[in-house]
Image 1: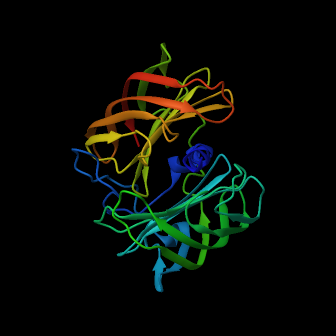
Image 2 (image 1 turned 60 degrees about the vertical axis):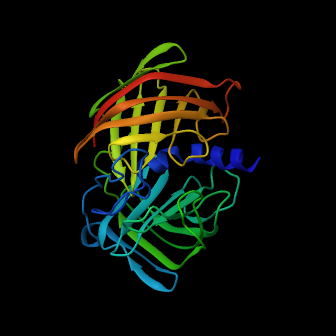
Length: 311
């Protein structure tokens, strides 16, 4: 049962991983099969313009001096950046306003996810509903800013070669959101994304965009019926990425309060990135997503997927 619970909470924070930001110039956390394994990251906004994001990680001081970014999207706060040794991303739901949010809690209103990677290495560590432990305290937030503290223990991500845990203490953030001017999910079109979903043609006519941050590449499309496909890739260079459970890269379909996800046991699929630049990503995809939150128990089949999206 544990993989299913963890995956359901992954679904709850799908918007989070769209925006988990990261450090400019770092390599991807894990390389795609047959691909280059490198992904262009977002801009190089520093702490002077965005704010501060600091902690002590395994006894060493961390300060996101490179690529610091912070976003608030759909009540999900995500912050990330890096220094010369570490890339660290943190995201938390803030549906209950200011207060303390914990890992290891089975509650879509209380979700904390964090990821730590080392530039040039595939190893990664993380915390989620069923991995790691700790808390994030949101002391204040507005439509443009947020501040708070955090203390986390991150577990090694299976299959990445990581060993042991990472202890994050004395964490603090005081940030201004980098997406305040044009948050995703409000009619953002930067290219095309289309597929056949359960035998019916689907196209991202309301939203069609890609994001890159924190070693993640995310593809998003939403049609006029508000059926949304979200694909989250660890890395994002040219190559093929498996979406088959339990790979960390995954895809989901959301519609009418129902969610299907390849991160649930039995999920399968693949994404092929055929072209990647600093400004665009293109390729193909297909997947079978298993029933998750609030649906009728039937899986969702997505075939003939293509995308050509700007960041």
